[in-house]
Image 1 (cartoon, each protein chain N blue to C red):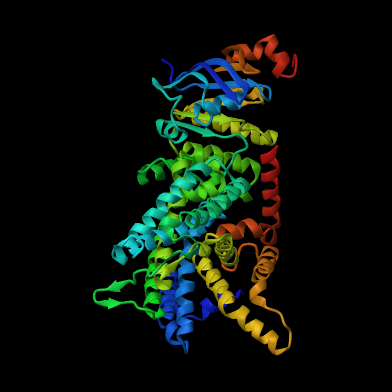
Image 2: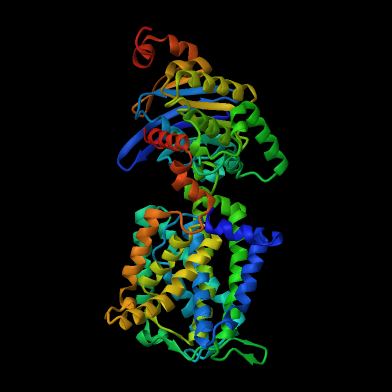
Length: 238
Length: 362
């Protein structure tokens, strides 16, 4: 059984159906990407997994357990961490305080210290800015902090929503390198991206979402090569 | 150098620490009533102390958790009436005062949860409007339930606190010392809460509720805990003030009381415990001394202006001035200062902050 399994998930906002019965799986150790245009339902999918949107129907299994009725804080404790779109760092708190809040669900001080050291190893920049208020940092630094903070709950699955949004091309490279690094250290990742080319390059498998329905899925390399996906999401026959 | 920094640097070394300053403040508070030449001053101190308790309680809700509550006087009313009903001839119940401190703050805390629960999904303006509504409903309810609450007359002949055979009587001094003890307790509790896990969760919700939920913070219970803790402080204040006045009546808990307490926070510095205490004392003093004395002074100049009647105008002007010139309050918490003055201190920081908000919207 896959680590994360979504089965026929339907989500609605009032009368608007955002997800019309999608199914996807993420295996332990994989990077899986979910690509699609604005409004396709990518963020809704992640919000449903982390309990912030209640599914109208369908099931979400994590490590064999149905988590679709759990509260967001219970889902974090279960081992799923979500770095939201737009970063949402705590702007008036320092890097240290942001990371401490990332470890909110945990109690062992030794383990938290260990994980702080680990994320600072992945993001040396955050170590330099350790006592700086997050709101005074650049967009790229804030994105790093948002990912580092999500890592502090020591998740088995990390959900990343648009980590490259609004970053310079060079920083986009850095962020994707970090995503690979985190995955290589053993964290499973479900990645949402508008930057489909980059996302398919780091991911093992991908799903393409169009207005609430999965229209393509398969190994990332196949999707990147597919005519239909190239035309819609990779800027034509580039 | 700011005035506060100048005062601090003139203190002997052991008093410069937070603990030293706190001890000094309480030492001054202990001798303060003996500096006044009449009982009126002690009476003022006891009343002002009760409002310090209220401000410390509201500070948990608004300052720590960022939940704008415009109806805090409702909990003050509930705490006061709880005491009045259980320590008066009204029902012939006369529970001991010291037990009632716990009971009244417990009842207020339960109502904090009950009135907080329907507001959980609301933020900002909407939360303010609903709490404003509760602030009106609660005193109105006490007014209308006249078979239990005495209606507009309220409940009188309340029991006085006593320590063994010693009854507090009608002199304000013992009440003042009791309130001072309660303030010490409240400061200790508030300060421990601030640095606790719960306190960090409150601040996370204040900063960004969505992100707080992503961190695994249970936003429902955390917000309810803020309402409950904040309300419990008003239960203490309610017991103290009701027992001192020997009376509760619905007109003591109007909207203006909620605003008065909120203004104390804005003036002193939201989220900062010493700031809230200072703001509270300044407004109480303004209400009790400055406005009446000012009116007398104007009369002596043959100006027939009654400042006490225009006090809300004057508070309004003070609040507007604060917002314009020192929005973080007289003694700000470091985070509010950082938020509101980033531009003055560091232009690049301000530019970054600008990027943060514009990118956040994009």
